[in-house]
Amino acid sequence: MKVAIIGAGLAGLSCAIELEKNNIAPTIFETKSFIGDIETHITASLNMRDRPIRDWVKYCDEVFGIKLTPVNTIKTITHHLPKKTTVVRGKNLGYFFKRGNEPDSVIAQLRSQLKTSEIRLSENCDYEELAKEYDYVVIANGECNFTKELGCWQERVSGWVRGAVVTGSFNPNEIIMWMDRKYSNKGYAYLTPFSANKASIVLYVPYISEQEIDHYWELFLYSENIRYTILEEFKKLHHSGNVYPHRYENIFLAGTSGGAIDSFLGFGQVDSITHGVNAGKAIANGVDYEELIKKTVQSTTDIWEIRKAFDRASNMDYDKMFSAIGTLGVKQLIYNTPINFFKLTAFFIKLQKRL
Image (cartoon, rainbow, N blue to C red; front, side):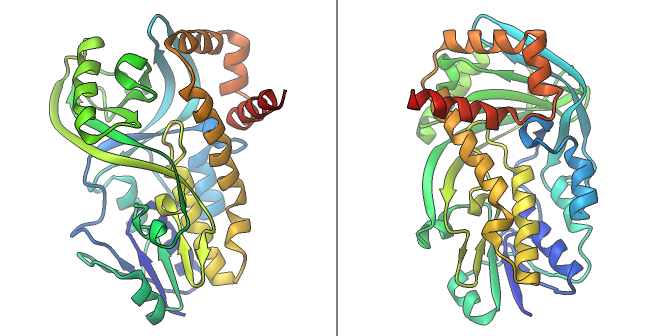
């Protein structure tokens, strides 16, 4: 069986790992001259996002057979609101992973688990031509361009990300988040540490142009009195959308190309790997890809309901909401139970609409 994978990212490499387990050696086409992300930064995976899974790293190993080593465990989540600050602590609230093209990045870790796949770098692909040459094609290029061409993409949220790698003094187990309409519009900012003296800091602002993100970035740094030493900066467009179907003839859509990025907090790492593994299973075993990723798709749909409600919120609403999160009972419900908080919240939002 001949399989082509467009993109050597999270979904593409995870798909290749699964195919190799079934004695299929795919050909991976990557437009860059290297494997990894252009921007070096730290991403977060929160356990509350992936319920009922309690520990994503353990689940990935035991269920997918993919071993990942995080940079660190998240033990503290600090939320800075316009007039409030709340802090949540726990033994394991999630993980930090390194992105970039260094040997310990999460993509490099996935690459190291491949044995027989062929990787072609600096390759610009025509998916229509590949679909004629190969039995199956998996589009996992981290973009929505091909998905749009196929007519499978419905835009939910797009916005700009401005970020930097900085030096300073940090708690290596703490993620810090900021939300203020003044500088984040309907978005947010966060800091994730590489170590005790290095971190990445990111501002995401939806519904704006590239020119506007620079203004919001400067306003954010000034408003929060952030004076870290900046080592490098980056800026990129961020897309979130609904995809259907996820398979078009012999073409599979996975990762960002398959709508894996959620529209609220922008999480997509876990869903991208899940998409990739299940695309590989669908190809190797001839099973229904839509059925395999059904729960993942439903999760991003639930979070879309939360995004729409969040868009209507004011700074005062932020303060009220996170003040509630800071109380012991709510904190326990969200962070220390198997309950899927996002699914539950989406249910009540939809119920409220009907009333």
